[in-house]
Image (tube, rainbow over all chains, first blue to last red; front, top):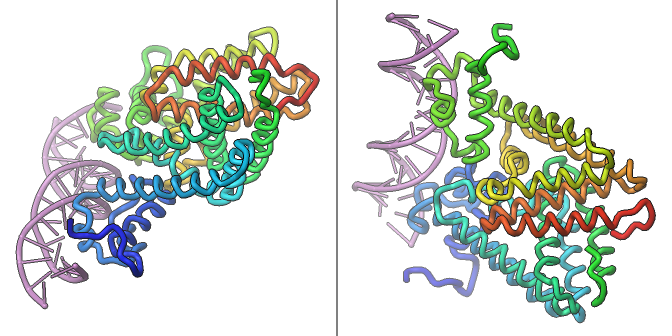
Length: 198
Length: 198
DNA sequence: GTCTATAAACGGATAGAC
DNA sequence: GTCTATCCGTTTATAGAC
């Protein structure tokens, strides 16, 4: 391999491109984003991009990897918290904190998943994997709370987030995310290890 | 105006194009869909499209109108049912029935909203309006159930649908929609005119 | 009103100089 | 390893014949 994954000093040009791709693809979507857009954001000449990524798809793939990396980091922070309720609520808190960005551009993972599912390339499997990691983590929290229906609850929680992200974005209204965040918090509180109040 | 909105007999070429656009844009997304794709689906020669729609955006707009029309029709059917609970559950039932299509292509309105929000054109306002009609209708049902937090519940319901549509599509798993549909049905049942069990 | 041929623009990708 | 110039396919959109 020609490129070391992480050089000791500043981000390599390859990393700069991957991170720029993650950001610009989130803001503009993959369809409307040109290689020139990404190159400009990374402050790299257009033609030079092809030295690091042979196709646009490889750049999209690198952006997904960047999101996956970010998710792993988030999870490791959450896992330091004492109870599963704390961990889930901290996840919620992060979503609400990001509400302004979400109102403008939607959920980074969700919008990407939505767009990639329409394309022929196999990248949809990559983004599905990222989503599955989050789903599995949430399921583990509900299971730690003693819920037998942990998977269903995890699906409901992530779906609630993806859905409210879409509405927040569609109506450009961060308040929707804030309000739904509070509702979900009450919902988590209401889930003892007992009843199955849907 | 040159074109009558509805000629007595078969769908006009303009209508054929609008309906073909609605379907193909759902299946492929606006970005990857070419005018040639829509023209082929409508069985109209490519160049001729421009006689009816001056730009691709106008065709997208017509597709959104078709979705709005479809929604109004659905609502008028639901409104014939006796109780708000019946009406909401019938809405759920329709979503679950469509789960195979959703697994393949996502929610028609949601995927469109997600994609249009990334584009410079003003079409995002059009699709937001469609979403708002559904939201307002759901709110009216919860209000008829005596809930003071009707708007919040309506947002939660539509968000749940949009979110589970995204997951159903991402994982190509219709079972997710079926399972979440049952959960939401129990949730609606649990909402008396009394407690605010989030 | 309907359709064909083609112009005009754009964007992904490559060749090759430095 | 870095960058410029350019090719080439695709797609939107138009001109104009029928």
